[in-house]
Length: 114
Length: 113
Image (cartoon, rainbow over all chains, first blue to last red; front, side, top):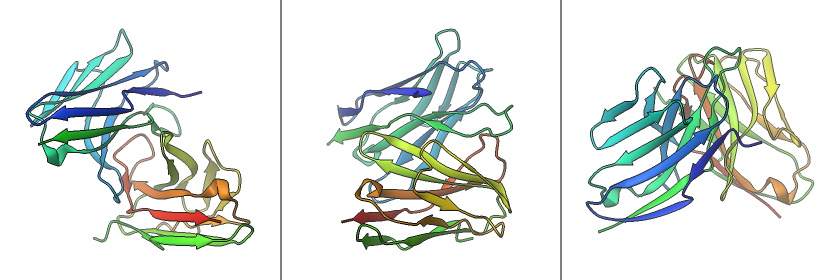
């Protein structure tokens, strides 16, 4: 059973536009929600993360919005640039468990056209 | 710090052959894990370790073995390679097991013929 569902699978955005990627989860014990960014031929790297005590976190052009009641969170990339073209993974973890492992979504391949 | 290193970068195997994918980290991280990445499937956890001498299975462990004799190294063994194991393999580590930032290696691309 997939713990974190991510959509869309692929996304094409024009330069300067807003990219939005959505994720949903069922396990209410999850309390840590990171986003990872992966460029072709590289390993994923942490982009931004949020904990459920806040509804939004912004770092530069990247913003996570979190809706605890709906069990959804999303990544917004403002003023999207060709250099943002990458695969994005959302993830979730229950930091209180003995394992605290990350459960990843299936990824979104973002292409930003110049 | 070199971070997380993986060798080899690319490997071709014939069905039934065995091999070991190497992973090392120099950050003194307790938690290490192996993922495989397949198109449209995201990152699936194969095995993980919360410290030297302690390993456990993830969601897709069949066909893979691991051991953790030191904090730094976490090799992944394929005992009898199958075409279904064609994938990109990533090793990751973090200081705490509990959902903290995981640092990924550059990956090993494996082709099983």
